[in-house]
Image 1: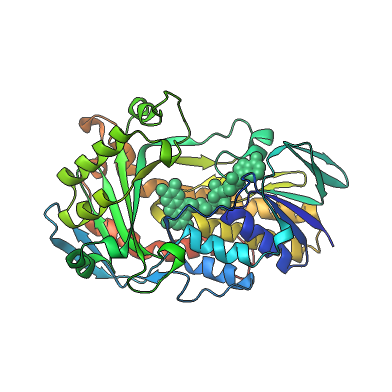
Image 2: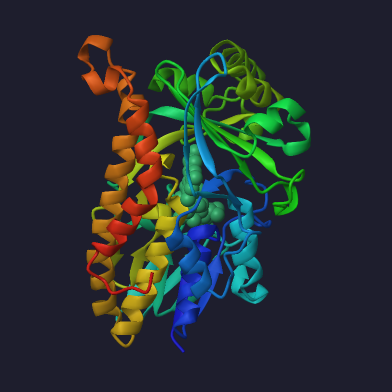
Length: 414
Ligand SMILES: Cc1cc2nc3c(=O)[nH]c(=O)nc-3n(C[C@H](O)[C@H](O)[C@H](O)COP(=O)(O)OP(=O)(O)OC[C@H]3O[C@@H](n4cnc5c(N)ncnc54)[C@H](O)[C@@H]3O)c2cc1C
């Protein structure tokens, strides 16, 4: 049985391991963290292709996997509904998907505390060398080690994430802590707010313990705010003066940075959303674009965020990782495990797909990126937002992702 070494134990790595196992490979996941990744309880959008990939991994995409939102609304600063339209999205959470994928993998094939350091290859196989000196050998290595990928750094040091000019402030609140009137009014809906130069979305997600039952869910806020690189550097400096250029761990964000964003929330957001946001312990993530010009290096292949980072507007980071995993498995299966041929087909399909996804998300975030330019240098679309266009983009996202999947020229079963 051929063996795949999968580097990275988040959604991308788990999806790749499951799909490879579904075609008869032995796939082992190596994750650098020494403890279970269980604490990233933030919301995550889904698309039908993610559900299809999970089903191929033997995991049901049922009502426990996320919360179906029936309507999208846009609130003005005073909290009035200015637009409302039906929607059909299912909002899940990183932790919910992680749990399902992790539980379905045999414990001995998910190895914590393995920090990949470098990779060696020869005509017969690939060797992963870990920080403690351990060596593991396989026929294929999948680099699913995220935006700061060690695998990509070894083969493509020039491919670096580019800061998009804004951050996403995120806050999650237990349903029981949302004031009852606000809960009744907006909790079940997908809410968009457009403060000047900014954008915010709020929606329900599975709660603590991944519960989707009414009363036990959580509310998730993502607030996009343009921040210039210098201010960002200050925000990414902790109380001890240490800088965290790629993004500061949430517990290290300085108290005054949090106090500042909460004060802004009370001034700039609709009252319902501000009331929720100020009750959270918010944190921020700088938004990046990343496009890898190559995905295959001999027996090594990039997948998920290690290959392409899609801005969150399309809500499709996990879906893209799922499409990568399905395509890789299908290419290997269809070529009878001829690794060179399979990987070349994978690269042709997923470079096209990844670039199209990055472009779509960049287009949807263009208004936010443009806010750092002087107003007179912005195009009309960058100065004024068209709510209709935002709602249209929201409504057609899954169709656009589906069209991109179909356009890859691979007969994958998704
Ligand atoms: C603000 C924001 C909102 C988002 N919203 C959505 C959304 O609504 N919907 C959606 O689908 N996606 C969303 N995403 C993206 C989504 O979280 C990721 O795209 C998805 O989890 C796939 O990532 P991944 O597994 O490839 O990488 P990651 O999740 O980054 O995981 C990489 C893993 O590799 C491990 N690792 C790194 N280096 C090494 C090493 N040297 N050795 C061993 N292990 C290593 C890391 O510890 C980590 O566990 C959002 C992202 C952001 C920033």
